[in-house]
Image 1 (cartoon, rainbow, N blue to C red):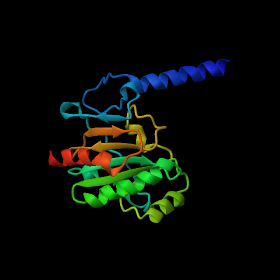
Image 2: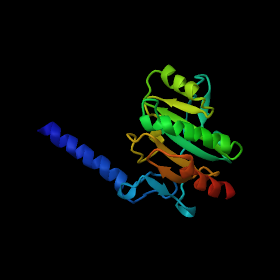
Image 3: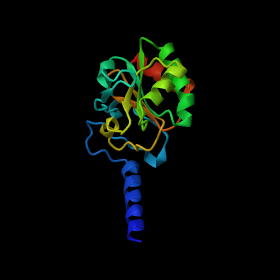
Image 4: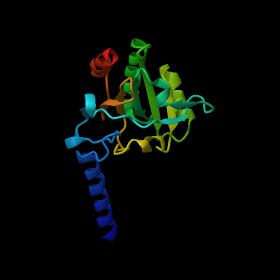
Length: 188
């Protein structure tokens, strides 16, 4: 009984942590999903900088990737796993985005919860993906995303050229979902 009450309390705390609309520090990005929304857009002063994310390159463990490497471009930051069925469809869509906007957009993946590096590497090779991914089996890279529910995969954050979060999606995306946001941010 005691364990059940502790589990219920922990679940309630986790749910309320993501559902509040209060951002106590207005200078940093804190993920909030008001009312359980799966699409959230941030305009002008509501955009906050995402802390730098960095980690080992999935395909080359001697190389480090960092979100700040792509400042000046719109960044599509996608949390994925080869075990995730929607990620399989979404990967091809993100590759199309990378090919359509090579000079203005950078897709950057965060491979999550894949404990054997070779498995997601095969996923990337088999699908012909050319955009880079940070290898993050434990989710440590994602810890800088305050308030982000790390059980949601796939998840995608669209980051403007200055490094501020302009949109967050907690669902599978198609090219058509991202094109209007990319076009608007590219024009800024």
